[in-house]
Length: 184
Image (spheres, rainbow, N blue to C red):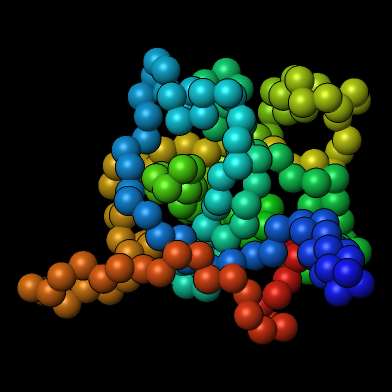
């Protein structure tokens, strides 16, 4: 009985720590949904968990709540995404340097660009809808845009030898050593 209680506390402690970054995401690449219904066809409740992979040279993936607002797919950070005292590089900072991302929702991968919402009025309106009144300065808000048509999709694809079969990329690789086990 005591072991079960200890295990329960350990499990609760681990789950309460927030998202642990992982690696490359696997899944079938899907077309970006068109309007209407656009992203609402992918997230019929207007929000849901999604996994986002960035930085293809050193893949970093996290799980966040995506939400649809005015037809756009968005995510928001915590209040300290850009704080100088934050102990590790935030995913928001990674996306600014490496905006090409892959978003996985219900097994489908969408190749997108993460664009920071810089219009103060739009940011304020979205965050107020999300329950912030007033909207704190430290929260980063990102919109996911389709990639430019001339941008190659192969940025995230594993290398292929001509004439060979496509390589299957394993599902999310979770951080396994201290050097990769950073908080988002």
